[in-house]
Image (cartoon, rainbow over all chains, first blue to last red; front, side, top):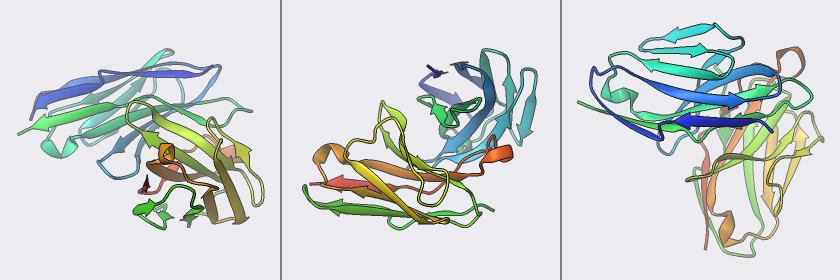
Length: 111
Length: 115
């Protein structure tokens, strides 16, 4: 059974204090790992897809990396507007095409 | 940009009512999904559809049904609403086939309360 565990559950940072969020996974053949951002009362917003170990993707202050067992979302010099819940999900190889989501990390950045 | 639109942001219904949640996407995606999201339980898949008139059960289909009469529209039906179906409902869509490893795109959700 595919499993995704995110840590920590919640993270409080001061503005400018860099940190990383972790996503550990077990999957029978990784087809893709997805990072989403979710603001309160809204649907998840797609951030990145990673397909193979060693791959990295960047967007503004966010950088996602992937190994064979986990993914990290690094946040460099965060701002209050980066406060949100960050979700990680994995997709296994066919025939199982669905995503398995982790529980999310709630990030709070204080000014 | 991909647009997934859910018909209601907030909905209040009574137990025993038949409830319809509607979702429309504008990206010509083959796959459409219905999830519910609850604190401490995360996102759980209710049903998905990979083509018109096709559907597959997800992890928690009990008490729900779906309808997909047109490619762009996917409806979730609560046959007889119960209080344990109070939740945030999220619709998503994605490509299939060669592009099935492309991300799912989500709507903004419907917060449903059953009284």
